[in-house]
Image 1 (cartoon, one colour):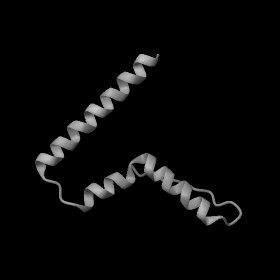
Image 2 (cartoon, rainbow, N blue to C red):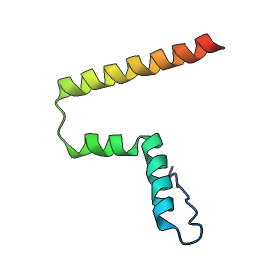
Image 3 (tube, helix red, strand yellow):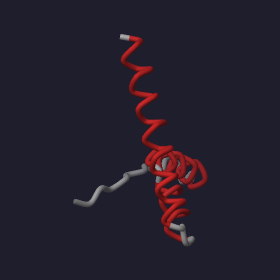
Image 4 (cartoon, rainbow, N blue to C red):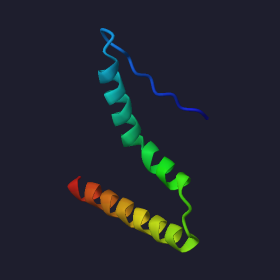
Length: 68
C-alpha cells in the first residue's frame, strides 16, 4: 500500500511548501529511516536500537494512559 503526501502551494510560495513537506516527513519518521538504511548497522546495535525504541514507545503509551 502506497501512501501519498499532498502539499498545496499557495501564491507560488515554494519555500513555504517545502517547509511543510519537510515537517510532515519528519513527523512520519522518513529521515530516520533513510539515515538507518544508508549506513551499515551491526546486528547487536540494531537489537539495542529496537529495544530502546520499544521502551520509549511503551513509556509514551503508559504516560498517555495515565492522563486519562
